[in-house]
Image (cartoon, rainbow, N blue to C red; front, side, top):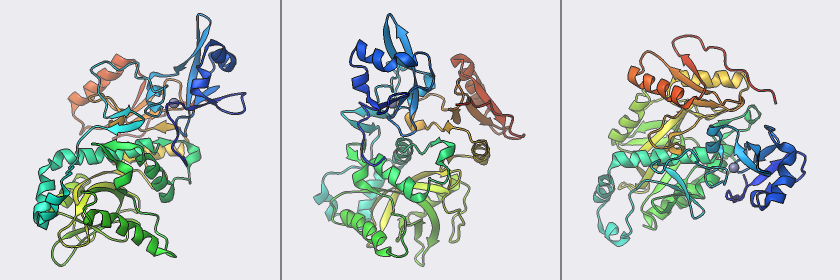
Length: 412
Ligand SMILES: [Zn+2]
């Protein structure tokens, strides 16, 4: 993923043809479809859409003498890049809503963030008042948007997808590059996320000034009122309470900490049952945060007005999780060399059930679900009803017992 690809005209890889064909060339007319697709009628892995790096296999059908492409499984549609012609929401109804949309060549995330255009007015406010202005924009709602931005970046960077051959390749530098690339075409509330984003460079001990320059450049834009805020994404390193009682949040690879209110710190870390205080111990790549930052009143710090994030299972895979059972199941899939995707809320229809994992190496794309006795029974019943309704095969693991055998992977 070194450059922005035109997802509306993806390359289609066709078995037996040396160079990939552009989608629009392939579907140009009846003759073209026949030429490219006729030897793949009813095969399962002869035609692959390359709108995403992982590639999504497509089925080839034949109706009244015309070849056409179709998703091999209904859940495959959502694997395509948003904007790809194969990302058809055929099952979407008029009333269905999604948080991520493709509009005029942009990936647009719905939601609002504090946006003030009147910089001169802002500049006359004292430091404390500036914070108040931003705080008034419902912090709670904003927190959800901040979380959605992080999810959207993760999804667009394909970091919610796992293949055994990714093992050993998903290091911080790669993850950072992928997120930065994904941010370039992501918009929220009219803002280009990429233009307002700081993800620290992988720290280089031989050239620490590079990280400092990166940080200072970002900070300078805030302090010159060029922008009213920005986004910071990174992995938590530690929290430090300084002499004056301020909470400082340090991120991995980031040369300077952010200031966070005690309330926000407690609320955020409380969600992960992490006790805040001076000495929290976290694994190096465990908790990823996204913050909406503004300038702080105490000088040259970034102030996190809003904070959100999620845990990832481990540093090799970086798949978002919410419980230790999730973590166990992902390790199990890893050990069994399975191919899967973890769908995220941000890419799903609003109000729909989002499975924990979709196995992508079985024909029926079995959905994996984890439950335990602490789970709300009504919710569990709703999920069961959802599966019988959709006739989607599902695999359940009661996390209070051992992991049952997984469906066999198709050999390919
Ligand atoms: Zn595609």
